[in-house]
Length: 250
Image 1 (cartoon, rainbow, N blue to C red):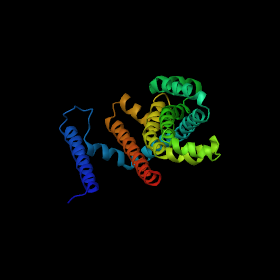
Image 2 (image 1 turned 90 degrees about the vertical axis):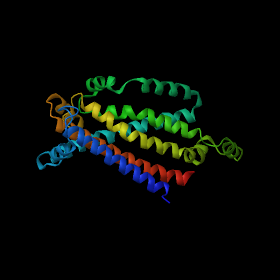
Image 3 (image 1 turned 45 degrees about the vertical axis):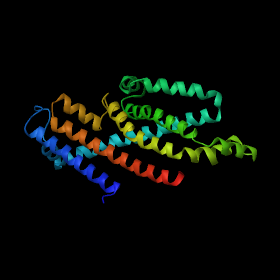
Image 4 (image 1 turned 30 degrees about the horizontal axis):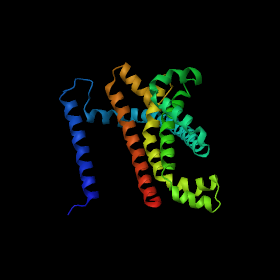
């Protein structure tokens, strides 16, 4: 009898092989024209000694911007959620402000960040902009999971708002918060790349723009594949953390 874990691994492997095979076939037989190169050409281009250093440096620059923006956006989102929890009168305003921020397309604020902060800070600002709402929703929804009866018992025993937050609300919210951590990881990468499109000196987004403008399809596809794999890796690490926290706090 095949257990669920083995079946999941099998389907994941089968789907990956099928996807890569279709990619190779479409590119090899030019079913989508010259804009779709075969997978073997993309890998050969990306792994060549001449281009390997280029891609590594670009990836490090993008991950640095995404990581810094991730931390800033997470801090802002968590801070807003904490303020809404500790000061209920501000909760509606914080909810509305975050909803409005989330409704603005990320690409629409890119030029504004570039003009206000400069091209070097635009990828960081875009990454932070994309992360704030996810963390705010994750934390506020997690806070709502705290047991009302447990909160009442702690209040009767003399626990103040801060004590209830630390010993009840935050532990109850940890699974939801970790889910937000996982979902925000690829969002930060997307924000950094969009920010790089508006004039950064280096990064995966710069390589993508160069590939599109000069019609260098192996460059474009290699940069896209590298960023996709990086996002999947960090998403997988976030999923592992999520499973650990759920086992610990639920």
